[in-house]
Amino acid sequence: MIFFKLFGDFKIFVDGKQIIIKNNKNLKLLFYIISSRKTYISKEEIYEIFWKNMTRSYARKNLNVQMYNLKKTYEFLKDVIKNYRENIHIDRDKISSDYEFFMDNIEKNSLKALKVYSGDFLEGYEDDWIIEKRKQCRKLANLALYFHTEETKKIEALLEIQKDMREKPYVILFLNEIKKFRMRKGDFLLNLENGALVLLEKGNKTVSQVVNGFLKRSGIEHAKILNEDEALNLINFKNS
Image (cartoon, rainbow, N blue to C red; front, side, top):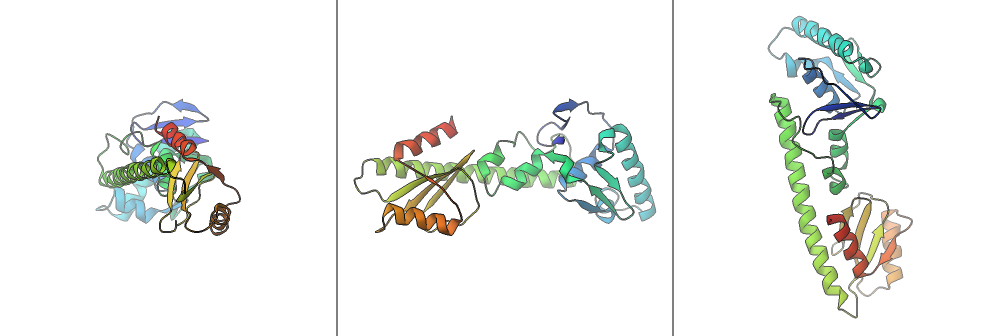
């Protein structure tokens, strides 16, 4: 497996071993291919990014030369990136990156995504397309951090209040799995690194009715019922 670190300083790891990066002009093409998150990239798309004001014959020649040099410099790419007539093919089963992980998880588990956000996207490079991705990642990270922090504060406050109440307004659940689903008005969801904390408004229902109803509509088989202290300990452990 080949891993590309695109946040902060660019690094490549092959089977867990860091590879020495050779400073060459073909790296930006590699950056673009890896961060596209596509299996196939049309050559027209690449021409528009790197040789927009050049003739197609000039662009085609330069792309072919850079692809050849990339594979010559980094031999482990030979079976990963294929140069076809109309497109570039990437075998996504053989590569991964922190950027891809971030984008895949930022909505469904922002805390997990933020763990890999170790700096700006491709720090030190100032191409227009890199700057745009950098701005997008920065915005997503800042929004996720803000909303996660605000939601955490709100849930902590509710739990502290409920501790001293005889009639509990919320049923507290811990989920081992994290699924993306819409919460009902009045309910709360806080994603943790290895699960999720859910507060379900009880109303006039029994605890069993509330839990079973939630499990049925969310498609989850099992959830653990917690008390307030257990839930607060989970939140504090996450923030430690």
